[in-house]
Length: 166
Image (cartoon, rainbow, N blue to C red; front, side, top):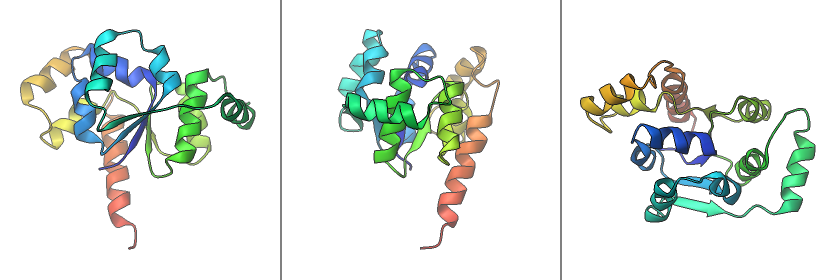
């Protein structure tokens, strides 16, 4: 399983379909910048993060680091939380970035890093029996199965990681 650095959107969207719990099944550890946590105003998501503190780590990112990251990615329209995600990816070199933000996605990809979205979590988890068929149907009804890009990307990442020479 991969480590992941999360942006705000995926946490909110997974909570909306009552599937926030799958992130601790899909990823070995979850890294979240404190700037992302500050954007979350939903108490159940904040409670979930606290409840799973053994798998979910909150990281402070200093202002000088944020401004240095802003300078490095000045071609992209990024918010503070986006900059914090980029900075955290510098620290967690092997982590997968998880975001639904297009500008952040392009910035991450421009640095050669792997980025995935949350839309495909349901099919990915069903493939690996992480949750039951009824839950997959529930997710489909909310339209979260509309794109399977995440599933394909994550599968590609997993296959690529397993093919790397020792």
